[in-house]
Image (cartoon, rainbow, N blue to C red; front, side, top):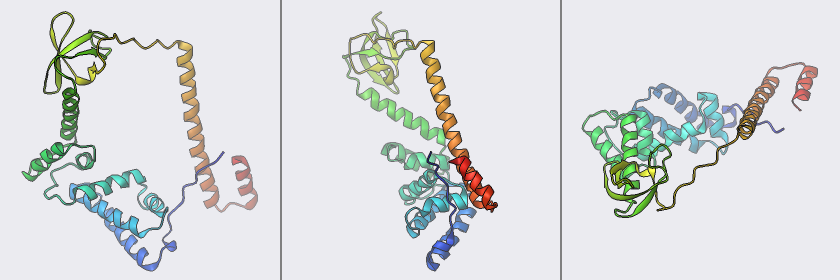
Length: 256
């Protein structure tokens, strides 16, 4: 079994100039973790600089040693710094909202709306941005449903599930359709399939034996991951514990 061992970062491997800069930025980043918008951008900028100073593979070691951070978290900071640093008056934007606005998947109109809101000094929350993104996604989905065309209701919780409906209009987050009983009903765009007419077949019910098998397989996968993690920590403890050679070798044998 292959065990991935987490390494500690060591400044001794760096050249003098790089070591001085990285240590200075480390202290600055720790002092900035107050999580305001401007702090988030500054952290991202300093992370970008540190990453450019470190050799291949050292950035993750440095993050874990100094901050106990993952590279995924660092990428969020760096993304915000790269995409949002050019804008002013961002302190009214919650840092979690900044991550959403910096994403390449966020429509320009949503980003511009909240940047204008921040410019006016109004708070911008994570919830506000999430709602706006949901509305934009729903609007885009609704615009793809042509008025006058027949579609199938694919939402199983709907009383019209599997029935054919005709699109009348899109309005806000909803698409209004004429149902088989002659009523006009609102649907979320995701509830109406793009393939018309044919009744959607319900998924076959999974029998209890199959459900039990899937559950057991999941538990086995989880247990294996826990074992791997435990082995990694044991190996690290052995390497750092300065044990007598015979005990150290016995520990390695148990992990083999």
